[in-house]
Image (cartoon, rainbow over all chains, first blue to last red; front, top):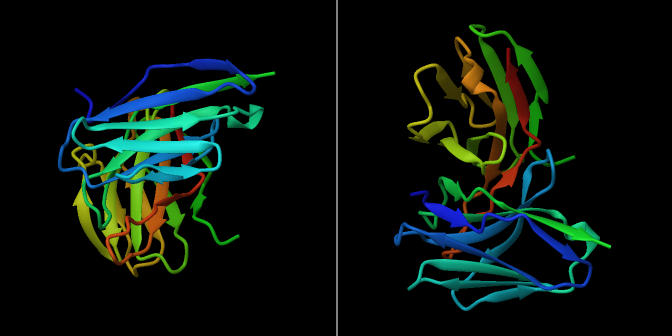
Length: 111
Length: 117
């Protein structure tokens, strides 16, 4: 079993739609959590960190449930520019070291 | 540009040859990471440096792979006797030490795409 598992995707949605991505992680000792975005043939870029209390950044909302070892990302009012692969990421150590990535979920937003 | 840079961006080599990649982190960052990404997969951790010390290595880092960061600034990743299975994107990331329990953010370079023929 992979340490970080995501919805297989792809997700194909129209502009303006709301879309949710789910992710589970197996290591209960994981300390920090992130969503990264990766455009085709580009490097991953941090979208947002995920905190236990949940956090929002504009149209993006991230939730963490430590008891269920579950992370989610909600995108409201999807834009064409949101089309990308979204990577769920955990870090076992709060102070750094290896990031463990999921395979990613591809989102395609169409007009 | 003050981001992470990597060189070369693309490398095509024949099986059995040695290749070396370079990564220049963001200047004030003391932590440097190497990852490998194959098509359809997320990046996989290879190794981590804090300053010049290599503190963590993945089991993925076979004895054909070696990484260095001699002066705590740029890093090199060498692959000896390349195999077709080494074909991948090699990503470098850097971060700086944080305080107060805030997780540090890893910033990625554009990657070196290796093709082994």
